[in-house]
Length: 416
Image (cartoon, rainbow, N blue to C red; front, side):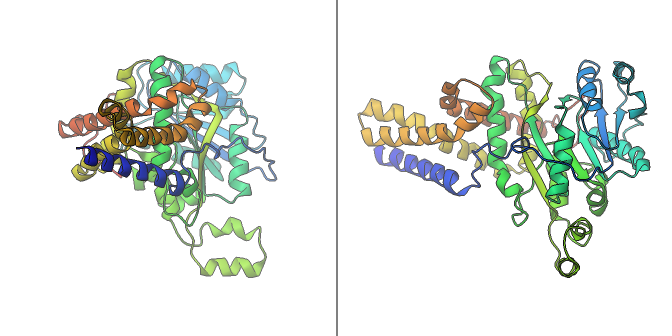
């Protein structure tokens, strides 16, 4: 038995060494939008599209932050009222008048959801269609529960223009105030970074693609090149689906902007060699989500809504998750305990080393969210809860309750 336990622990330890050394440095939090201040040399036209369904409680704060952006160029906000029953549109109109910018806000009454669309993406489609009359260079796709830092749009545009990116998105700072938020929300970001290492996402030569739907700036020509929002109209994890579509897109479309920055010889050469769409994903320490997750149940529902979708509804991937998560996260502390009970210090020390490695990996995220450093040691228990959430997500899917959001339940065909 000792040999088996030690073998499993050595496997877990090897996995952690591989993750830390060879998995895109996912554990670091250095990919941040606000790391360097940027200057705008041009002022592209930008239109924000905000899908809102029963967001009267949060829209006064989120919309105010959008309308008060310090972006010096042309900027309009298109709020799509997705058949709300709580006077969301009335509150939005009041906010625009209160900040003295009623002409900058355009409220669109959403029409009935057609077959084959998710509610959010149908609202986004309607907003983009209305905003297109302004011939924007970029669309800012954002949620109704996001409070934007005053300089967020300016930094997003500068990032896109200076680095010639088709899409820039930031994982906004999630609310982390209650006990359950402090325990589980930083881990949500950590697991997302492990699934999609930001450095790999930001490398145009790496196929990994991801985005964070709370704040996405996408070039109009890039959106047109992939065929518009309708190409991902059924996606529940729509932000990552959009990122994948943009990064996989090829052709001369994205080269137009680069031609303005390079000599004619290099410009013509680029047209001969198709390249992937260029995207960037990072963290934001200033723009934040207002959505509260005060209880275990609310966080559980958030994760369970799409966890099985993330596994492409695959029973094999689910089985791999149910086996892999305990091996990677639970084995180290269990081996520490077993090694101490059995007086087998080889097992105990190997388990402790594995536990310390995962704590080391998790600590930068804990520090980013300004939580107690001791929470970094709780990752095994947190991982166990997330494993149960993933299993529950599969059970909900099999019971026909998967993907429920804002009073709608989407069928199993809604995948990436």
